Image 1 (tube, rainbow, N blue to C red):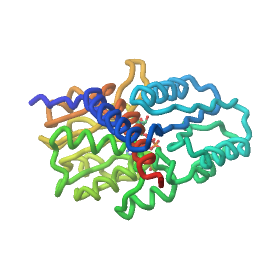
Image 2 (tube, rainbow, N blue to C red):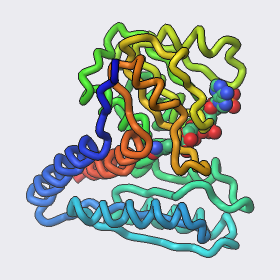
Image 3 (cartoon, helix red, strand yellow):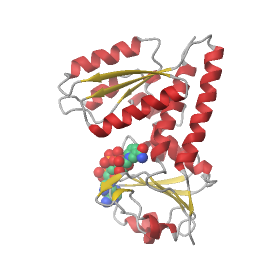
Length: 284
Ligand code: NAP
């Protein structure tokens, strides 16, 4: 069997088209008011610069306003917190994205906690994580939201499915588990202390790998006919590879995402969707 490959690039393009349409409707309904996304980049990490440039470009492509703040590597924490406070108060800013990781003199948790939950388009504040954990509406982290979109696009039935999530980070694993639970899957979360990863994974109708370990998931860990979503992004001598050993896994799975071209393009698309959501929920 050779699995259907889920084309994240195409699904992300569809999401961006829907967001662009939503932005046009928003601007018309609000008399010319345009949703705005503020990006904050501290330091000059090349990968972060590329991510932020992409986010800014795609923000403008869907008709929203991009407001960027680039700060030096040695920026003290207080200065960053002051900037976030001013963005919280700025009525032209609907979403605030602080690119992670931050330089070591800055406490990442303190920075996330300073963002107004209504503008927290990364969905990382305790307020939004709490809403998600309780199954209530809020701003949901972009990558997990993108994974759900890919599952729906692939036609994978989530209701009643056995779903296994590999990884329990606040960015991916935990919010994804909450989203799958909210969609009525039976969810198991694995991590570095899980005793028999193969036994747990091979029960999964939906298997999502978000570990950061190249090709950790082999064919023996996949239930025949499963949908496999690979969040992993690992730079190796062979180039960018996922957490799933793609070729052998494709022989067992029904549907699978590639790396690159699977989950990756979805993350920015869902950031745009979150920004439009934040703008739409802003009180008039
Ligand atoms: P993270 O914070 O490092 O978390 C990794 C998780 O994997 C942890 O929960 C860890 O367990 C678990 N783990 C590590 N080794 C394991 C093993 N051998 N068996 C089972 N579990 C294991 O990483 P993250 O931020 O969630 O990111 C995960 C991957 O996704 C990375 O490759 C990252 O680059 C990628 N990513 C991609 C996107 C995208 O847009 N495509 C977005 C975000 C992240 P413990 O909790 O026990 O340590």
